[in-house]
Length: 458
Ligand SMILES: Cc1cc2nc3c(=O)[nH]c(=O)nc-3n(C[C@H](O)[C@H](O)[C@H](O)COP(=O)(O)OP(=O)(O)OC[C@H]3O[C@@H](n4cnc5c(N)ncnc54)[C@H](O)[C@@H]3O)c2cc1C
Ligand SMILES: NC(=O)c1ccc[n+]([C@@H]2O[C@H](COP(=O)([O-])OP(=O)(O)OC[C@H]3O[C@@H](n4cnc5c(N)ncnc54)[C@H](O)[C@@H]3O)[C@@H](O)[C@H]2O)c1
Image (cartoon, rainbow, N blue to C red):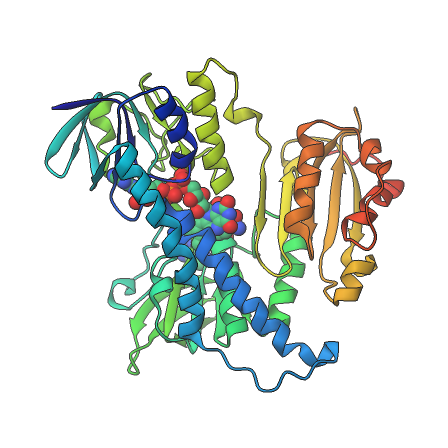
């Protein structure tokens, strides 16, 4: 049996972060991957969705041409060209990575499974490791809906294999994945209906954000059914499918479509690892329990990325890699020290750092709040993209920024500046006294603090 200093199971987003450090230490490393190297982000997540969204934005701006005094002529979507572009960007992103893994580690293509705390089986072979890193990510959760097994549905992977633009795309789930795909396909020309079980879209955001995002999507022609339960699915005579749903008032309706996207949350890829044999603990949903340095219940086994349930983004997975390396080097980076930050790449995007009002209330935290609608911001008016608002929460005690939501044009970039303020615990007066360039969306942030609310207590 071959012995390694480190075995890495799954080649998600932290792999590229940790590998140079491990190689520098001169360690022997095995990497195991059951699918395409690089994991969800480059193959089936961030990269393809944001590339698709870029095409859909181009389509959207062409259809708005007349508003800007441009007559673009008739707009058509060449869907195979759109997907060629998506594949042309995502595929090469992993081939160089695969070569690097093959050159610098013993690369095992296959599914890993624990035999005992130090031994892993892959393709009938057994290898052992002094340290083992579980980095296996998540997959789409498929709900238990009667008849679903009899119809053709796609998840975030399958949707990238579509050869023709859906005539009617039904999207089950109205959160990050559902909203991004729904808007992209609507703008490319599909009819789109979102069936959201929760009472509003993107339920982790404040209700005003969910409401305005819903208005934006509806204004583009997307039908949104919130608080709606999918009761059953069945094949339709025209090779499509029918989904029976029940509205909050109890009324049932049968929705017909040619394509069904399932985007109702994720499941950790921990069930096939035989964690019991290694003694690794997980929670009731299968997320592997870790301490602030990514260490599992077994001291020489670590879990990095989405599978540990402490983050669900590429940047949190990469940060887990930095935390792991820091511990090896005797440093003190901790998962618990990072600030929540992400962007939903709707157009306009919804970007958030730290607390929003709902979270502050739920946690019993007092705050002051400042808000600015995008329609008051010159840059947004000039671009004629005035949906959304900026909301910033301030700690009434030390005047630091507790969190911010930037829903509006440029929000996905502006949020990083606010993240710096949160991470550094800067008093808001530092932002207030900084001069930003005109015309930008950010330029009004310093002025927002002039109208901070009184203290809001939960
Ligand atoms: C549609 C979509 C859009 C997204 N957009 C964004 C975005 O814009 N921004 C953002 O920050 N995040 C986004 N995410 C989330 C992001 O993709 C993940 O958070 C990120 O990839 C981190 O995952 P990871 O590194 O933990 O694991 P993954 O990237 O999921 O990698 C895990 C790897 O482990 C392999 N594996 C699993 N089980 C085994 C096994 N038993 N043996 C061997 N190998 C195994 C898998 O095949 C996979 O390659 C998106 C996700 C989706 C689905
Ligand atoms: N821009 C980004 O960073 C980005 C983009 C896409 C995905 N992601 C990552 O992927 C993860 C998963 O996203 P997601 O949108 O699949 O899941 P989610 O867990 O965020 O939301 C799932 C939604 O589906 C709804 N739902 C649950 N069961 C349902 C059912 N049977 N029928 C209809 N609706 C149902 C829920 O009400 C909920 O709003 C996110 O946590 C995020 O980390 C990130």
